[in-house]
Length: 193
Image 1: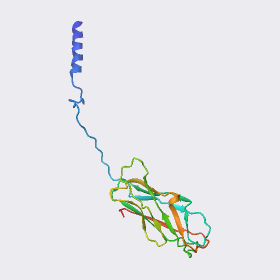
Image 2 (image 1 turned 60 degrees about the vertical axis):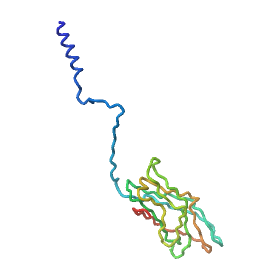
Image 3 (image 1 turned 45 degrees about the horizontal axis):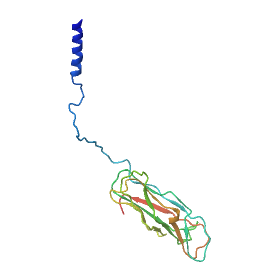
Image 4 (image 1 turned 180 degrees about the horizontal axis):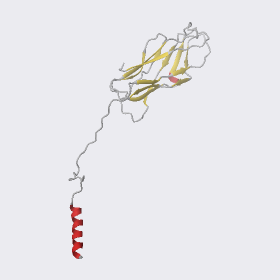
């Protein structure tokens, strides 16, 4: 009986002495390894997803010129860029503050000043786009740069936020009572200004 017990013990010892498949054959103390990732082009193009609508409420007519402040600014300028490094630019133009018939042009100038470029995701590591300190939109239809990312900048989701106190309208003297509005045209190009 002892003979069988000895063979069984020898078999167990032999089992533990055998290498286990998949086990590392050596351990490196203080060595280096690496981790890799490949980021490929994101889906879609650079997109302008929102732009502000502005309300100045109502103001009493005056004999002289006046400047009024916006009562509300709905939405910032928002650009979504899923990894494109071309840079981009947003421009705006207006067709003039006109009455409902389109015959009377108020001759007003819209100012969107001190926009604040902000990443939607606070962990965004891309270089921030820029916005001009002063942005004036008259009724000439001329494009004005509003929000710009240089090459390799402005990747991810970015907003340009305007506080109501920085959105004003210069109304010239001689304005007559009426309801006036302008069409603001926002255009995105996939290249910096």
